[in-house]
Amino acid sequence: MIGDEFFMKMAFQEAQLASEEDEIPVGAIITCHNRVISKAHNQTEQLNDVTAHAEMLAFTSAAEALGAKYLTDCTLYVTLEPCVMCAGAAFWTQISKIVYAAPDPKRGFSKQGSLLHPKTIIEQGPFAIESEALLKKFFAGKR
Amino acid sequence: MIGDEFFMKMAFQEAQLASEEDEIPVGAIITCHNRVISKAHNQTEQLNDVTAHAEMLAFTSAAEALGAKYLTDCTLYVTLEPCVMCAGAAFWTQISKIVYAAPDPKRGFSKQGSLLHPKTIIEQGPFAIESEALLKKFFAGKR
Picture 1 (cartoon, rainbow over the protein chains, first blue to last red):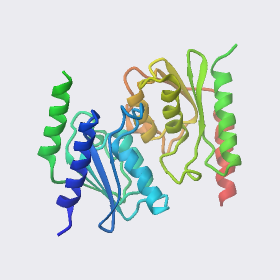
Picture 2 (picture 1 turned 135 degrees about the vertical axis):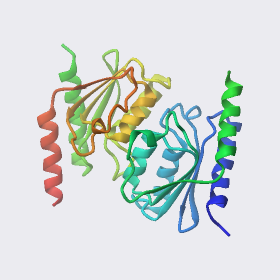
Picture 3 (picture 1 turned 45 degrees about the horizontal axis):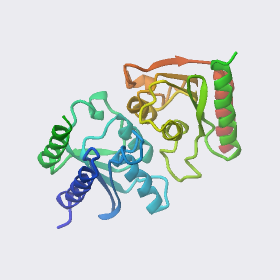
């Protein structure tokens, strides 16, 4: 059955792609009625743009795919808890649901209180261990 | 003398441009050692992208202009207090200073606590009345 496991695996594969491109390995998928409408991974190095997080790129391409400004019937799957910027962007999109894999106690938005749109459901989902391990391996290789 | 007044006037002119294009009238300028390196205004309608705030576009083009990821020696002039997303983006850019014109009690980042980078100075600057009046006029025209 197609569900969180299936979509988060796709997000994780995006994170693996990021890692291969020497980008911080975070991946994101946006679905609309169980159909994938956008895929993205961190591209801050390639685009020389610290705002080019997986979620930001996914939001922009999802809106383009839908031809609609708001993502009210969509779900974001992302391998790391969104940062403040990405949570703030999610607010503007009015996205229905966010499922993240690994929590981010240092830079995650949740420690700042409720930044999301009141309509947005937030859940911690599958692939937390794998996503965190991929990030740790990446940063260990940088030391 | 070139200073806050001069640069905020340019940001205000960008906001006026936005208004002419039927975009929410917010404008932004980024300077580096008193040289303007990027100019932008809200383009959420034109780009069909709710994340296309003046500040986000200005950050991206400033990094491109400098060929550097971080905006450590730069100042952002913006006609409205940044939202959570833009404050979160400013965090990642490590920008030195933010000067805004009109406060935004409803959507401004400051009510959420300290979202900015500890290195970033934040100031309320000139053109507050003009910037607010431009926004009010725009929204009045939408009713």
